[in-house]
Length: 370
Image 1 (cartoon, rainbow, N blue to C red):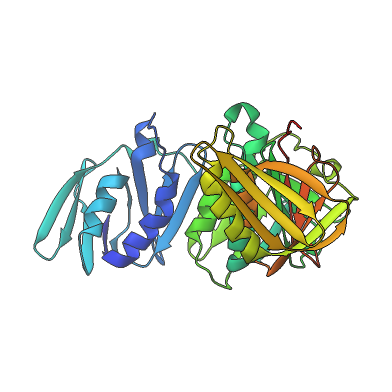
Image 2: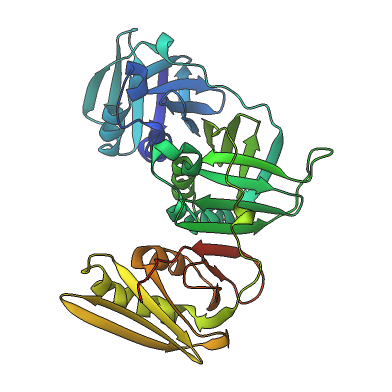
């Protein structure tokens, strides 16, 4: 194989595929980048054995072929090069990288050990603007569980209907759901399709995307997914099993409701959280009454008391929350105002838009002694 490419093009492709490098290498191919020539350039592929990421970069192909090179070493090398780079595999044992006066020899891995990438036979195909996908995921990914003993909750539930895609994460303490409105064809006889995407991978994909109107296309079978954007494809198994029926968790009525400016409550929560985190339980107490919301925190090193105006409806209420859980929700809302709805001081709080249903958050309170 003999190829030539621009260092910046290669660096961009490596920045995509490197997300598949595992933290712990078990098999040699897992630390390699598989480079293969195409009519349109070269394709870079990295896989950890489950997740695989491919990216095509423009290149001059002088001699067809393929090779498996050490990914981190090659990536670091090319990041320190500029302009045109030549890569030749002079034998089955080594590759030579040349750039201006630089010449580096890299030992190859056994390319035959690199696994084939399983293609996805589509059950459904959904295209969403990259900016919409990015914003939706950014608004929910904090609520995925990280405990692998509850593997189903480490996933992001994706529900597709004819006119919307709904993304939901929950970890047992809070729920986050975002809707993306887009029309697409559903398989005959299907009104709703549900898939559990690996949550950490979905977060990685959102960070890989530019904030652009170009589409990301999600191709899903009953067991696997492929996300395609630009010249990059991401392949992964789905998480199999039955997700928690979150619709049963969401209250359908409430006895206390308030409307508040998002920036005002966010700033108040962040200031009070400075004191809450110094305490033993990281607790924020909320007192909801006519036209005023009071947020307080207490610790040995001090006390905080924040009062902000609200539009109030229903019964006065005292309720407490873990400061981190409440802050995570509020800081991921981008509407000017928001609505908070309650029933009792031991039942979940629902945070939603004042109008519409673009997002829904649920936070469990902390039980307080009198």
